Image (cartoon, rainbow, N blue to C red; front, side, top):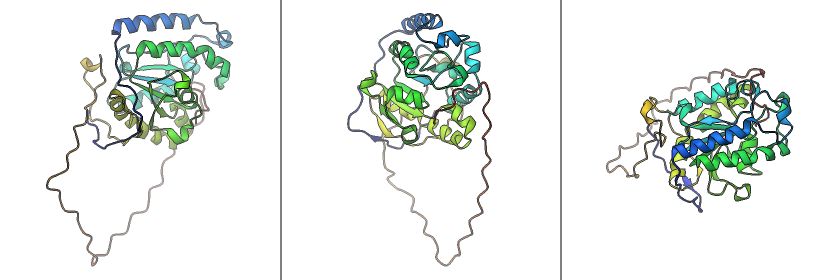
Length: 295
């Protein structure tokens, strides 16, 4: 997978280099134990209204963890994360950079659906926090991709998603996530209600592979350059271990650059064509959408 060789702006204090000591088998065993606890959890009032708890799913050896807000209607019915309309869009986003959903791990801040898809309460988030922290400890991901406002504030308390989306930051130590690199994105469900955010999410997703490269080397990029999606998806045998990303070679200036063309002042410039009105992708909310207030 090709990665654009632009140089990101690096903050002055890098995160520590990322190491992954545990075996995939050990990580999977820990994740299975956590999932078993989540499915019978009664720590908060959400247990009384849920159909199924939703622990999360994915590859135990992944380097990338996606964290949403909470289950929606379909997730509550199936016990799996991101399987409704928002989940379909998230899968498309993951595939757009040449990865597969099975190569990453996906979970939520809260593991049970809040009734009516309302915002999770602070006590509900606090009740689920130990599960998320243990999942992070078991996976030891190089990069956490936050999806939506509540997920972002779990790793960067007080951050505003409209200001930091599409960038990577070191997680706030006060949130107990020391040494983690967090890349902020809007929640996919937001694009289902605001069509303009669909393009924003697609653009931000193109920066995730670059963010992973920086996280691998213990560097935090304040502004990540855009990157073109790959032409093809990885082969099936590329799933275990590191996600397929070509590391950029060192920058070398062109020894014999082409001269820049000079506009001829005697030639009248051609008029610019009128812009084509953008098609709106907005649609009304549906029952299977994820939680609504992510912006």
